[in-house]
Amino acid sequence: MLAVVGTVPDPNFPLTVGRVDMVENRLTIDGKHVLVNRGTPALLGAMVNTLKVLGPTDITGFIAGDIELGHGSSKLYQYLIENGPQIDFNTIVFHYLQPDVDWHNRIMFMLDDLEKKPVLIADAGFMYAAKMSGQAQAYDLFTPDVGELSFLADETAPHPFYTRGFILHDDNSVPDLISRAYLHGNAAKNLLVKGAIDSIADKSGIVFSVDSPVAEAMEAMGGTGDTITGIVTALAGTGMQILKAAKIAAKVNRLAGFFAKPTPATQVGEIIQHIPQALENVLKESYVQ
Amino acid sequence: MNTKLPLQRTNDVRGILFKLKLFKEKKQDNLSRAELGILVFENTSEVIAAQRILLANDWEIRVMGPPPEIQSGCDLVIEFPLIQELNILRLLEKAGIPPIETVPVTDPLLQPVDLFHIKDFGRFLMIRAANMKITVEKRTQLIVNVSGGGCPDVPYLAFKLVGKTMAQAPNPLDIGHTLCGYALGLAFKEMQKKCLQW
Picture 1 (cartoon, chains in turn brown, yellow):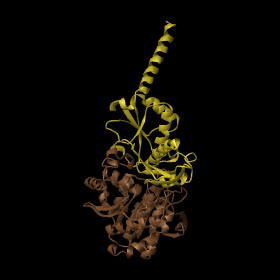
Picture 2: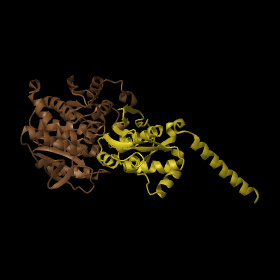
Picture 3: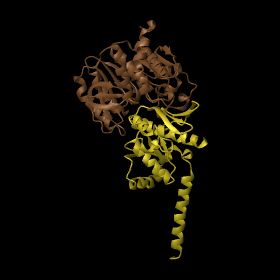
Picture 4: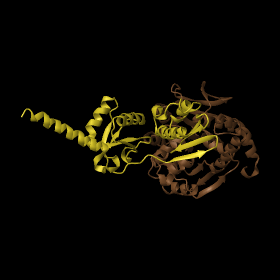
């Protein structure tokens, strides 16, 4: 099972587990609808459109409404701890969830007990909790932006909000931050660092850099980091090796952004529409086949 | 005797008030760690509400990161002068937000981020605080995008802010509940300052 665990910004959206589909700009999960916008809905939209090109692979969403105190996240954590051992996970991405180390560790205990360990990807709030728990190395991929990479590189920070200024400073180069994150055991086995130049790295350093095409306005747009995480998760869910999937995802996200001709006011749904075309183009390039 | 007593009491009260005034004027930075405590709350929303009440009552307090032994992942604490513990607790209890714990400060606390990154796109301006970004169209002061963050209230905050002018939009500090919401509030405050210059 290709699984997505995350939240939607609707307090009335109940804990829902089911197959995810998308019609135009609207996601459907177990008969319930969510508008595609930033956050986990953007990640899901990007996954659906990626898999439209790659062939039929079902996405199972574990979704709850959560806008404030983490109540929806807690329901999801509880559900996974109780039901996870009976589920045949292949790839899991953990996304917009209330970062809480205690819940994180209970989820990890559940995953550790599975007969076959799934590919584990974390972004957003769950990545924060994964780093703070000291178990970052248990994950196959983190997808931080440069600010979040600074947080991973700061061994004392429990949340990006507390990243120390000398680490957060623009003068620090991405390779240095990556090294520091691995030095303190706060990076996953692989990193996809989203930024002006996307960097794909492992503990040896940067393996691939992707810097074109450029759509500078994407930095200001909410959800463009979520789409890249969605694309790489969908690719990994088909069995593709993580570093290759990350490289393709970085190129596809940039190309989809380029096709959308964005301004800082563009909304992420416009980029998601261009993912199938961008993926087809990238897959045609022989060097990433 | 009877004539002196009220005077003495008045002097005592004046003395206490003077000390209190002195204390309130003594900046938190000048207090030694042994003179400081932290107020621990159930969640970040309560911290923000308590901060508002304490600042409105002129208490010298600071929002800080919790010490490692009580970190859960998305928390803030309020650093306060220990000598005023009872007064502060009384005020917070009256307001209906008593802390769950009061702890003396023993080690340096984490400082919240105080660096703002500003990017000018010409027609638009983006401000980043920690992991949160807000982008505004300069001419209309319309909030066109909110990005970054990882806590679950971020998409909700974006929904509430995007498409509104800075004047119309709710302050993220009033409706946010997490550290990401708090960081967005700081970026929002910085953007308000910029808007005054346009």
